Length: 132
Image (cartoon, rainbow, N blue to C red):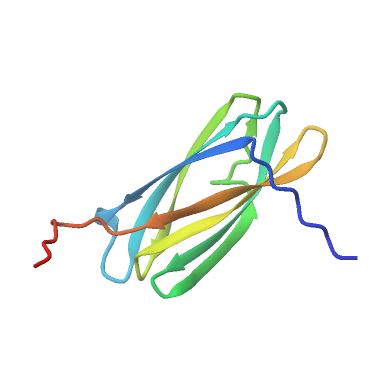
């Protein structure tokens, strides 16, 4: 019997900030730092169990990453609590984007997914461009 997909939940609020790490980048290897804040806006305590990322570069799907927790942790969020972490993504051919899912579980053992909306991985413009 096929496994049913987990329900999507919207009680976890996400904020994402992306920074291009120019000092750690070179042609063909661009490094983007991303900072994610998760806030539990629901009535139950939950724990982040897994993450799954789809990474795209200028040519299409460049990578798929999944595994337990985030940055080696499986944070527990009580109602109203926030958790912030940062990680990075190397990209050979920007611009790109990332999106994915977190899998959470409440104290009753019920699992659900939280969608991570797509966010852009773009090089900063070194100088303004003028169109003629």
